[in-house]
Length: 128
Image (cartoon, rainbow, N blue to C red; front, side):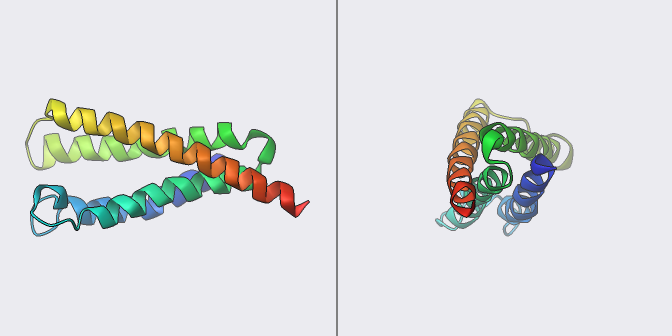
């Protein structure tokens, strides 16, 4: 249950943010001249942080494991969605640079989730 709640929190915030980012005026924000892409990036990053915090708060003894599992589940959904969009929706391949960014994103999301779980565990310990 803790994994489902944390995963749901991440996906409820991340999916709309990524949809807007990927189709801003017909192209991804990151490919445009502005720095507007930072806003959805911060939203998604904070979703992983708060999802991890929720997992750590609800189950302090196994918060890191639950946060990591929730992050992996959410990342799987988000990466499959990104892959689907690229291959079947806009009919473009996945460049090596994009795969590199995805790998950095996975590492960052897992790190933020674990950090969030440590904060959540600390908050949970303070409650009791």
